[in-house]
Length: 322
View 1 (tube, rainbow, N blue to C red):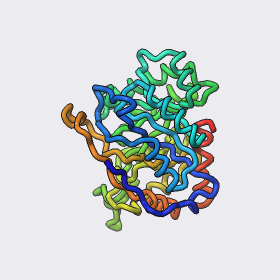
View 2 (cartoon, rainbow, N blue to C red):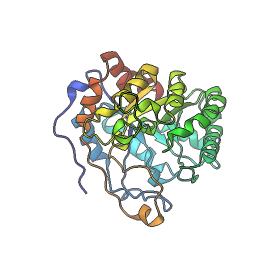
View 3 (spheres, one colour):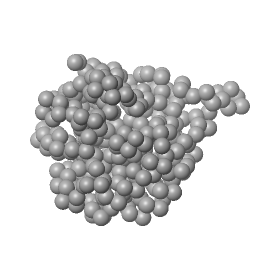
């Protein structure tokens, strides 16, 4: 299996370094996938990622545990350790079973470079069920609450229903905020660009601000309660490679709170989130081909130098404890 790359080095994009806060490593020869996985990805190994990282000019990264490995973070700890031998600037975000994880296990993960937890909604069968999502948030918060005061762990929570955020906001404000747990959501919170919407304003143009969940998400960002990863634009826009229709979404996020915006590549570009049948989950699914450099250049043109530095350097440095 071949992973496609752009050919131009983008070193001018990162004069002060660049943090990719959402990528994966899949190496099934070293670590077997979980039998109840929701997706079977092809290998996407550390040497392949280092080529990708070098070609874009990325300096730091946050390895997000692939859900195909389930709640066993053995692979994550090994991958983070290996990445740090060649480029000592890698953190990890793990997956746990909140009903069984122990404080000792969380401490071992922290010592290995893990700085956050990812909620696996597939495990809860909760991708389309807001009540189950509330349960998942509460259980993960309870599992890590006593172990993150001095460690600054975050909780990554992503689903396909932006309209749920109105019901989820009280959980964020009543459970996570008092516990000091930073909440992060991936892929634009799955808010869509105009190319994937049918909402028109008075002048006949698509008004992205009118889509369900937009206001509630911006309120959480504005209050400092939610970090947004500008990752995987191909999940929310059909206008590759520059995804120009995402500009108003990006500007709304940044203007709400520039200190809560992050960037992630989602390398090696796994397909769209969906609930798969057992047969689909066990069948190897190819990655998407993405022009990451074109997307980065487009994104850079929408932001000031200060906003770009916050997103690419300062915000991830603060959140993931560099």
